[in-house]
Amino acid sequence: MVWATANSNLALVKYWGKAPGGRNRAASASLSVTLDGLTTTAGVEERSDLAGDRVEWLPPGPTEAVTEYVGAVRRELGIERPVAVVLTSNFPVAAGLASSASAYAALASALAAAAPRRATPTEVAALARRGSGSACRSLFGGFVEWRPDGGDDAVTQVAPPDHWSLAILVAVTREGPKSVGSREGMKRTAATSPYYEAWLSASTGDLDGARAALAARDLGALGPIAERNALRMHAAAIAADPPLLYWEPATIAVMQEVARLRARGTGAFFSIDAGPQVKVLCESADADRVAAALAAVPGVSRVLRSRPGGGPEVLDRPPAWALGPLADHAGQAARRAVG
Ligand code: PMV
Image (cartoon, rainbow, N blue to C red):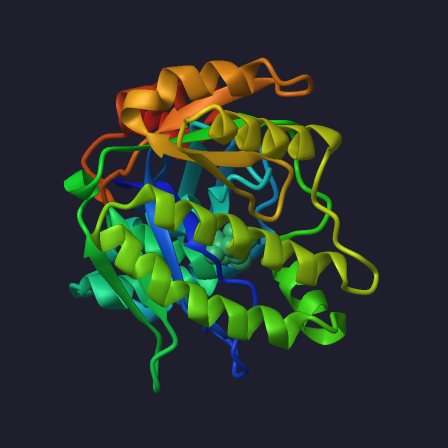
């Protein structure tokens, strides 16, 4: 069995809209930070005794789309026999924490590692993107840019994880799956929101500013860009028909708390993806204070802490944190692998 881990990522300038032609090519460029410790592990094993590919999520989750993806990608990579796949994440799945990014990045990395021919990181990023667009950014560590680029999209690391000792805190306001997934959300926004074109053109302008602020490690410049980019994405989504309102009351309360922290002199800035959780950026020296303030907001159930993390790793065995879930629930293949 081949194992790979990949971290989730948080977009500071977001992807919310696809270019025509399929394969999850982006309508606009995005810039993300890879999130240390918000990780998915994927195990892949070729199995001649199986009639078709088999995918298992631990804890159990929907597998139809992943199974279809696995079938297409493994054939492209030259894996002829069916595969058994097991996936487990160490953070809430399908709750706006970009678990699909780490899942498809880990899965594409594990399939590529199990394949007879070596694929380049760029090829693996393109394969991950087909599962979930944002997954292509999780193929690299640190700060990552994804640009529509003529023939195919380009994904590049713009700075390594140790470029900047930022903290990324996640205020969890509701556990459990989101109501409308990002695939459907983007499609609906593009088809029905009068603000979709405005969102795309504003976002393109945000990218240049964000890249410069990142190079200068200037949170006072990057933070406001990330906040307005997230709010503009949500404004376009809220204006869709039917509307896409991903927020809970506590989502707004956390945004207000972040503004209060700033008014009292702490550099903290938020971002929100297609879900109710609020991600907050601050310097790592301020992380304890900011985490305590977020945890005290009514409706926040917990605060996860992360920092810029690395790219995928291919392993012979699953990482220690995955052994528990794998041994408890996994099918035969995973149980054999964990011994
Ligand atoms: O990759 P998807 O289809 O899960 O879409 C991700 C969309 C956002 O998380 C809202 C933005 C982004 O760039 O990650």
